[in-house]
Image (tube, rainbow, N blue to C red; front, side, top):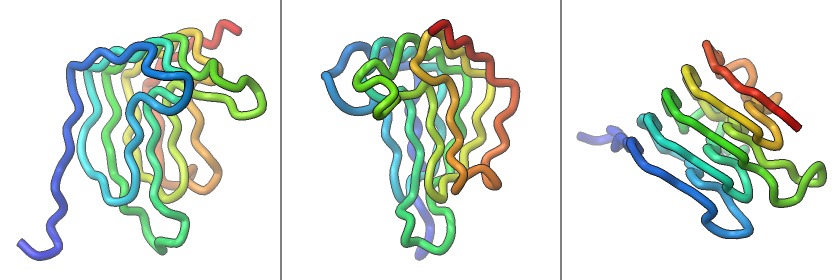
Length: 129
């Protein structure tokens, strides 16, 4: 069908120390779908990152982020460029709920250019730093 977007589902995976740079799951412009039931451990950057290009006049990335466990992510560069458990940025629509975040450099971050579009609900996170 013309104009219909494909749906992405990332479920039941285990991500651990991938590299010294980057995110475990990085969803960009035009992605729709679900990210659920994953364990993401000790990733250098952000565990789950959502965003759309700033030049696009409307949100294109629409993702449900639920029932994930994110532990010790974001250790790469400290305060200069902190990583997060979950990050929602430019023009992203995220339904972020029922996630456990423990000992990430920052837990959940919703950037100001996305704050009106993302209702965080029932996210449990502990920042022990």
